[in-house]
Length: 260
Ligand SMILES: Nc1ncnc2c1ncn2[C@@H]1O[C@H](COP(=O)(O)OP(=O)(O)OP(=O)(O)O)[C@@H](O)[C@H]1O
Image (cartoon, rainbow, N blue to C red; front, side, top):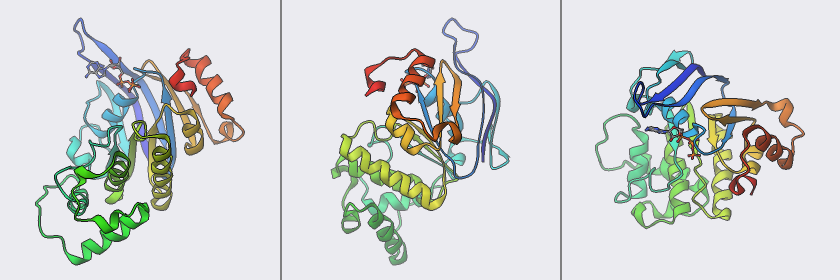
């Protein structure tokens, strides 16, 4: 379970550049929930993820993961149980290492990594995990990641972010830089892995259809606040057109990127 209690984030406090990026955020997500987050530019979505993952320290409030107060836990320690995926496929993998070496790296999340020969048993585990992606990467384990396509790399990043079975998975528009076909493939893979391991997941997206399809709940953010949470009951009969209408009327965001 993830719980945020009265979280506020202020950049450059008490200066002329002061910016309140998150303002009194409260929410609770149960184990295994898949929650999608939508919001206009600058609403605070990335800051929310940075705060949960420990890259940004809140000005106020507390964060609990499975009853443990992680508010002051360092980012690298949180990475042992929080997996994260970014929009840029280049961010989640090391290009000069092979696929197998990247997965070995993912296996020691948050701990010091020494590149050692990979044991036959480890390779077998990697082979099986890669096979699930259905992209043929299991036959290319000694290929350097730098030569993979954006979609292959993002699928591998997804596998890496979930390899150590994190308690929480944060997906920050992780398919936005991919072409539509590859994006839907990576999203389907995401849903499959999340369901298989019952991972508590938060996904930021600008795509209303994806927010509706994958989110068991949908959070709407505006100007550093959560302005609405659409729960299972309200979501049940919601169409994408109704979601767009609801979103636009609440945020006054009529951006084409959202509507499409
Ligand atoms: N390091 C920082 N210093 C100062 N202001 C910041 C910093 N990071 C973010 N902000 C500001 O905080 C607000 C929230 O930014 P954030 O990136 O979280 O929004 P977002 O919802 O992820 O937007 P987008 O959809 O455009 O990525 C914005 O006004 C942004 O300019």
